[in-house]
Image (cartoon, rainbow, N blue to C red; front, side, top):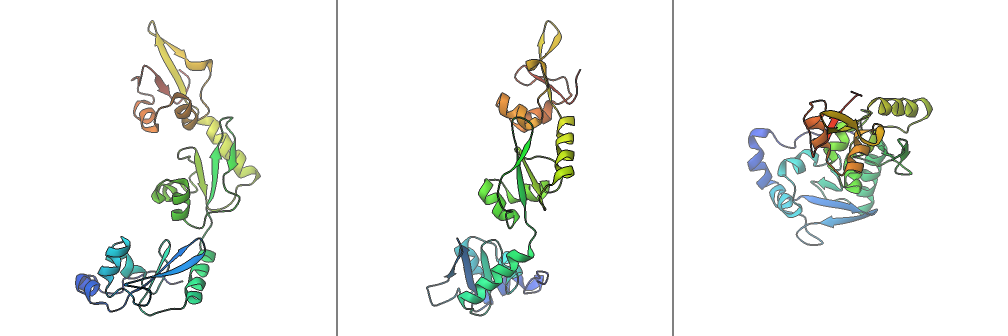
Length: 227
């Protein structure tokens, strides 16, 4: 599909948002297409009206009008049949890259979270209850976010082993201080930051702020290597 472009020049946006006559809005939910509007038969009168009713910005509707679906919505300047809209959603799904999500286990291994890939950052974020921007930020980075790894393709053999190797190199050493001496907690490092956070019931930011600083958090000292 073509790249999204604004339906109107930027300098005329405000006027355009309030002058567009007829905005047909379709939403997909659990595979069912529904039509949104003033009522079952009439579309929204303007882009501004549609934006207010479905809690999106006029800019977003203008950008995706007669183009790509946006999240669960499709916007059209002309009426379309349910089958036409369904075909548009299906083509959009088939053109997207899948998002495979893997979960970090307490034993240090990683396991596929979903039996099939999510169709978009938005869907993954909504199901996992995290920001879709977080999915986008961490995809294919080999870096976990809240114990989850995001990839644009399924992991196989050497790729998975490479991730596990990097994870083992990213252990977290946690110490307590007794009589001016550092005592390693549990006599071994945590396999990852996520495992440390879960075991100690603290947040990622708390470790990040004090990591390798010799400054304690709740009387604990965090290091990226053995001291």
